[in-house]
Amino acid sequence: MAREFEGQKLIVVGGTSGIGKAVAKIVLQNGGTAVIIGRRVDKTKAAVSELTPSGPVFGQTADITKTVERAALVERIDAQHRDAAMLLNAAGVFAPRPFLEHTEADYDRYLEISKAIFFITQRVAKNLVDRKKDGSIVNIGSMWAKQAVQATPSSAYSMAKAGLHSLTQHLAMELAGAGIRVNAVSPAVVRTPIFEGFIPRRTSTQCFKASTVSTLSAVSAGPKTWRKSPPRYYPASPPG
Image 1 (spheres, rainbow, N blue to C red):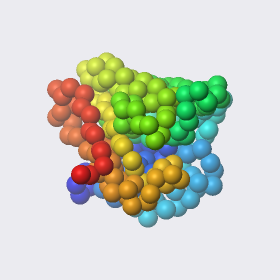
Image 2: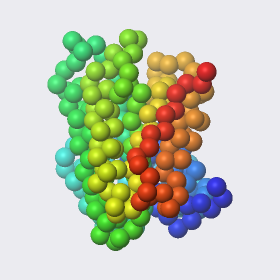
Image 3: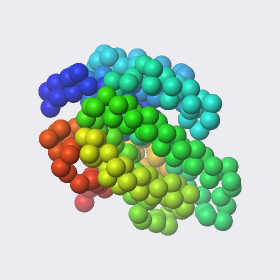
């Protein structure tokens, strides 16, 4: 994979931790540039400091669930990072709660994240089309979008992730002719700050590497496949 990403820029929505930050680091180590987007200023600065030894990295801070901040972020991406050829949508929250206990605030949080991913992706894709450049978009979906788990009731989360998988299929169809590949990764348990709050560290650690590799595979599949391959899904389930 040495220098595989030379001269390429990756935007990571939700790039200050977890899968997003791990993929950004690998891209940097292999010659690429990364733009990481996070909600908190301190966390974004810390991630930039951690990643900088691996390569050129830019930090952008915005709460993508807020309309004004989201719109400003999209304009900054357009002004400063029109040359990005890769996008990883890794932002998300996971807060299991029984269906009968969900509030509108819970639901709206998932909905706003989905809306942000939709319009950030739209801007990045439009820039690629306008510049007549090939590109790659990867969405971090979830096993929970396709399977109900009694121990973690997640109806609102699963509904949002199922929508993301559907968006992936539609964009793969619509953008293929422009040389833009669109794929999704469907992790199960992954060692991220979200899951370590209620999943044993050993279990989540086993799955982290597989999920990161699957995501990287989706991002980096060669340009010769962009116009010919159907949308593909890279599952990353617990070993064994």
